[in-house]
Length: 400
Image 1 (cartoon, rainbow, N blue to C red):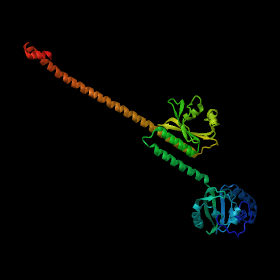
Image 2 (image 1 turned 45 degrees about the horizontal axis):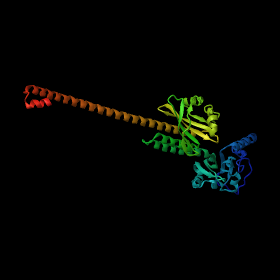
Image 3 (image 1 turned 120 degrees about the horizontal axis):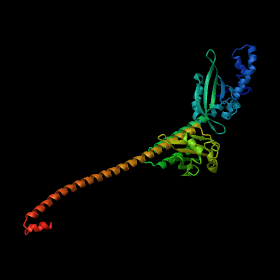
């Protein structure tokens, strides 16, 4: 898939820019006798053509000096959006298709392809403006004496894989930021949950994300927060009762994540169809369990509105990680609540101890004062009895 010589003729063999090496050429290189060659050629030619016709990878073969494209499979036209004939009329068509940021690097690798080939990833720009990622593996084909006869390669469209990797990187970055913000010891629970639901809606591209929490006997789930992407608002919705949606609650009790690509027909979610899904236009649901201390405490629900949705493994992994952040936020909230209750109890206990100490002190003082008072009264009584009745001191003691 590199520069070709426009002066070299190309024939019209099926599935190639030119026919050589044709099936006959390839068999001839095996040095078979004429009878064997005549026997194998029709079948080999047919199978070789069928193989390359249905292959999704782009198979290419160049002359050893890279001046001629000997073979180019039909997948080239699907991936590059260009005709194979274009490589014949425009020798630089392949180089011109390279993304500007990758062109210089790939030009250098192509110049050294005869050394040991290459295994490279690069981008191409199709005529319609679409950018695609390609993994291209090239290698020299050598004779028995080691001389290079051909240069060949297999190019694979990895655009979807690259998009999935980029999405995963974005999701991991979002999860990391959420985890760091959750670490704020003074953060209230609701704002943390709202950040999680909002981030999940953005990352997964869904319309609604909500957090639900079970009551004590797990017969009811209350909505703690519902984020709606269209309005950018947070709110709540009516509680869900096990008696009304038994299959859904049973699925949650089994502690399995629910990835319902078609929420209307999935047996775990079809109970919602008429009363909840259709009125809101919900087509798919992805629910990840929320556990605290190993106990199922609720669910993080993602709801697709409008177009159908197939939840990929990456989607489900992100949902599970986001649910884990909800679990951690709830655990942090409970820990802070318990710590606050502990501090309140400790304060009350300290106050009670202080009052008890004051009571003991007051009791001791009263006891000592009473002892002193008894001595004073006894001496007063003794003086009254010993003094003459007409004594001035007796009159004062009588008044005391």
